[in-house]
Image 1 (cartoon, chains in turn orange, purple):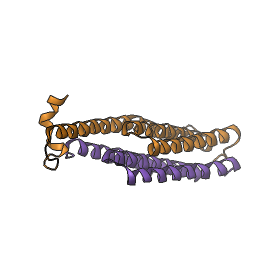
Image 2 (cartoon, one colour):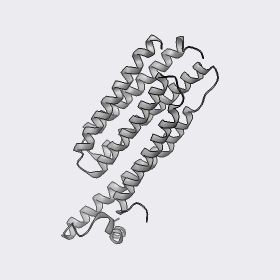
Image 3 (cartoon, chains in turn green, cyan):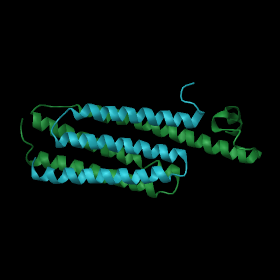
Image 4 (cartoon, chains in turn green, cyan):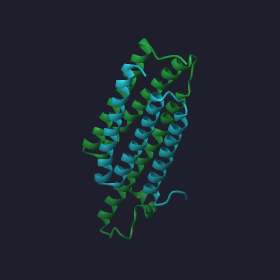
Length: 127
Length: 92
């Protein structure tokens, strides 16, 4: 076990503080932006913050354990793979819901009989 | 624990706590369901970050597995909820 010293300590501290600031900015954006599609951009900053924490963790454990410890890379890869999938699915679901409610308003139908899930047959006509 | 990290780690944790509180506000207020799902996903990511920072604080690499599990479960729950909004059912 070695102690974290000198430049490595400052590097870890700077990365941690940067990730905290990024996460706070992302939360403010999530709260303050007016539209859903604008609010969707905010959590990408949290992904950047996660990368900062993972790099800080790699540096920390590599210096403490005195050999290279790359387990933080798994977190980076996990976030890089999963964040776009969630974002794309949510955006598509939002577009679908807005389109189906606009379609229902246009057709003057009672909206309680037609949930968002029951409207697959009309999707092709609207696009 | 050296002095710079002893200052930086609590400041970072306070930032994450504030971010989670703001996202909880959006989770309760959110006008539509997709806003709430977005806020929940953000809260999951921030919880994972808190666990990673605690792993640095206590110099234990056991926290990695917990953080990875939180990341995977956050992804699965957000995807399932988005699929539910899309189709009305999760698995068809």
